[in-house]
Image 1 (cartoon, rainbow, N blue to C red):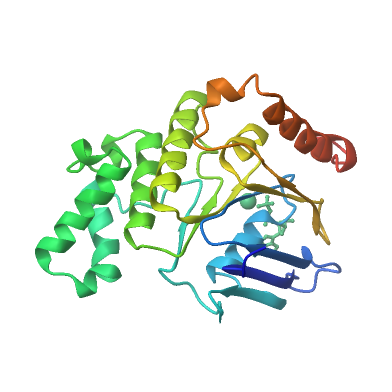
Image 2 (image 1 turned 180 degrees about the vertical axis):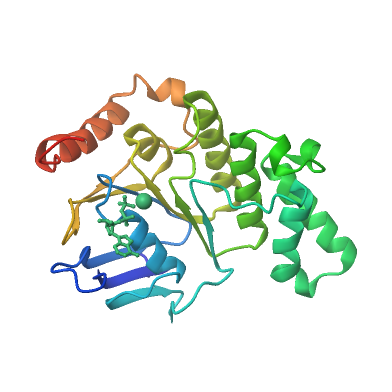
Length: 263
Ligand code: ADP
Ligand code: MG
């Protein structure tokens, strides 16, 4: 593979004096522009891994390296979108994005440029018409779109998504997945997305990283999703390659690494 853009190297994480680490020796290399999904059962350590890459949590050993620099703290080059949006409720959608712009890439921009860049990112997620609304006045899906606009507005090297659509209804989720696919095609952003939705992982990703159950979780398998882009969810629904990828992930999760007591 090409030189790794993002490298996760021998990451182990142990919390407090737990007898076993949550994660044990995770190695992963991500190419620039690649869309990687990480899938695994609840509690296996997906968010823990993402938080190490985000710089929100120090690994007990090993670490993450982005473009040759070891991650040691959070930074705008690694923008995170969580399942539950973290918009500031007293600010409008515009102001929520603008705040991120002002604090990062906007420092080198004129006032007019910061304004234009904020609007550009709102338009990217089709939220320009709602720019003056506050979070309480928009739907959950719209809030996630603002969260994505805010993340992208920082021009991150890597977009880190932790189950960003997990709390949304199926139709809204599908709509946002399509938007993220569009944005990924347009900007070529490198994406690491945590999900537990098999269809979502196959639809969006270039590779699917499948994690074994914790504690002591490792990467069990990595699946290449060899489907041409742009991808269309309706056409894929009957595409043999899509169905085969889906089945491979389902088998991993529900046969080889099923939870002992299904919750
Ligand atoms: P996932 O995102 O795959 O559902 P997490 O990464 O959130 O899983 O959690 C993995 C395991 O680590 C869980 O057993 C969880 O209880 C534990 N864990 C996560 N964060 C902490 C923490 N700050 N302190 C102690 N244990 C934690
Ligand atoms: Mg999680």
